[in-house]
Length: 293
Image 1: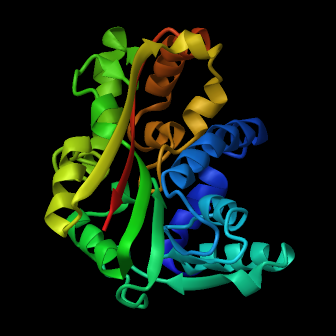
Image 2: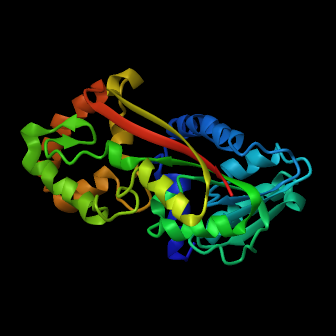
Image 3: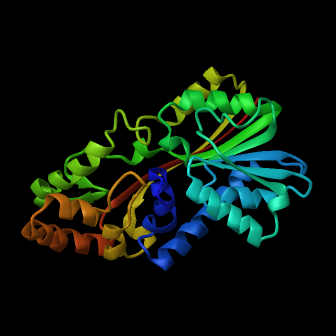
């Protein structure tokens, strides 16, 4: 994969689960109801053309094919590497006659004609888009009258703590000078006020959709603040070797980048028992939004 954009493919297929097959299985199990909800909000009749933007590994698009006996799915992504993978999967599943594969930027959707699709789906795509208004305008453009867009987005700003003593929900007060260096790596890559993954909430999305021309808009927001130990014991190797998104290093990589061997050992000795005991707090918010043109 020579195209630098294929870092998205590498993250989706490898770095988001750190090579841990159990974590990959858990991730996919969590995503199945997300797919179901996104498609439920499309209210498909079975004969539509659905555009799946940022199709990734095809989770939503292939799910939609099961509901489109007389319709088709356009798989769209900015990454040719992922489109190649999805096309191969479609060939293996013998469904290519009901699929198209389009390389397209979410902000323009240039290859897609005006008023040409009945439904549009996205999952965790807008968090990577700087110009979200242009993306919504493009979606509005390609939808037919009365067409539906349905999407899922994490509201990462809700879970992002600017409190110095917290690192991903764990109190690191005793080693704060060390964790300051590590946090600086991530903050330099994704500043909270300017990075598209962090600089918005659900209200901003609604406002932008109105500006793009959508009149009927629905929102379902789910938030939680819970002890991490509700999810069982943490896995230290996963914790340090999983990248949270395609833009950032793993915690292990960030530690190696800015800490001395002695500091790495201090951080590990303090933080590992807390992670394995789930001695932290999870703040999480997700939004399902659907709208009619």
